[in-house]
Image 1 (cartoon, rainbow over the protein chains, first blue to last red):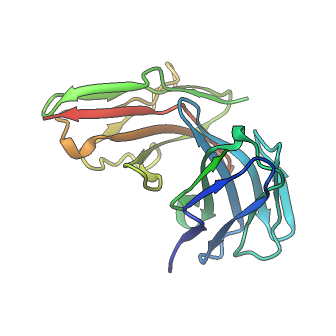
Image 2 (cartoon, helix red, strand yellow):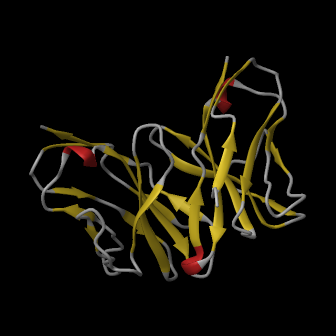
Length: 112
Length: 109
C-alpha cells in the first residue's frame, strides 16, 4: 500500500512548455484533488474529482486541466506553462475511516 | 465562503518554552478543523483533527465555536517541532479543504 504517489518530484520548464504531473493512489478512494502551495497563501485547491469520469474546478483552476479515467490516477496538465505557475503541487486522496485526507510528497515546479 | 486565518507567519521560540499557533476561521455551518504539519520538503502530515480530541506529539487544540478559533498549543517546544504548520477547515460531510496561510515555527536550542 503505497498511498499517494506523485511524479516528478522536481521539474524545470520553460515558459510556454506543457507538462503533466502524475498522481496515483492505491487505496480505492473516490475523491482526489490537486493543490498548489505558495508562500503565505497556504494550499489552494486547483481541481478535484469525486470519482472516475467526474472532475470539477477548485479555487485556482486557470491554466490547468485534469482528467480521471480511472479511480487510481488523477493527472494534472499544464497546457502552456507560465512563471506564475512556479509552485509546489500536492495531490491528495480522501477516503477510509473518518474520511481521512492523504497527501502525496509534492512536486516542485519552476517555470523560467 | 469559508476562510481560515493564521495571523502569525513566523513563530520563534526557545526549546522548552510554550508555543501557541493561532487559527481563526469563518464558516456559518459546522466545520471540521485540522492541523497539518510539514517538515522540510516533505508531504503534509495530519497532526490533529478536532473531532478526535487527541494529543499528538504533545500538541493539543481545542475548537472554540464562540471565538471561531482552533489554536494549537504545546507546553514545552522541542527542536524537532521546527516545521510549517497549517490550519485547515472542511465542511461537515464534505471533502474540500480550505487552508490558512501557514505558520513557520522555529525552535531554537
